[in-house]
Image 1: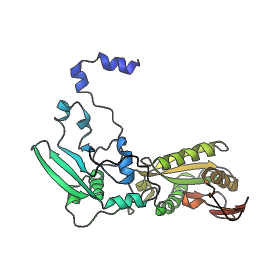
Image 2: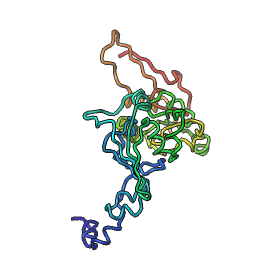
Image 3: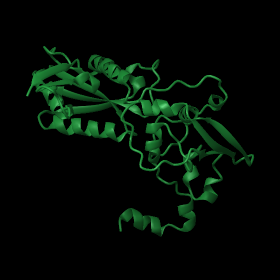
Length: 287
């Protein structure tokens, strides 16, 4: 038994009652959204049984939680899907954005409840922005870009240029690879981890995470779970860095009519080499 558990059991029931539960929450949301809702956020699909409180203290022992909660949202429809996988393209998120969701809104101060039928995108935006008016606006809120949108990699290249201008003036041979990362999407998380491990086999790598607003992307609507992960490699041989990334990210086609292969780095992120590459982001070869 760990020291922390021993300490917890040594507390009186009253002390434990007032001790906040340590919740891991997603940053960027007005409402406390626990990280256990990663799948719902990745798909933009909240399901029956999902419940949100307007304060993290809503997850205390219920008698104590009631002293702090003003509102809760409990989803009634749609039903829970079983066996669903993480989305592999942006159409899942955008497709669910306008689909129907029904939830019970409870005001614990006035002891009133209200059944609300709206869209998944409006509920997502309410949790994100915290503005009740989104439920009444005639105009559907803008679908934010996710890590699976092709436009996000273009923004990653823009972010790479900004990072280089701000942070790399003192470096002799900086190579930057900036990749969008979304912690709600396991495919994105696995890709970033593969890049990290792969580059470290051959290079000294410095990593830094940047939020979209730090890159001046305030005019672009990006999901709050998305940030930009920058891998900085100081090396004069930019082609070696490129080929290391190719070896990490290239997935061979299952069947080809010829022995020709092709790899386009820009579909994965923004690469800013120390020296311009003779083949750019696109590399083709024969095996």
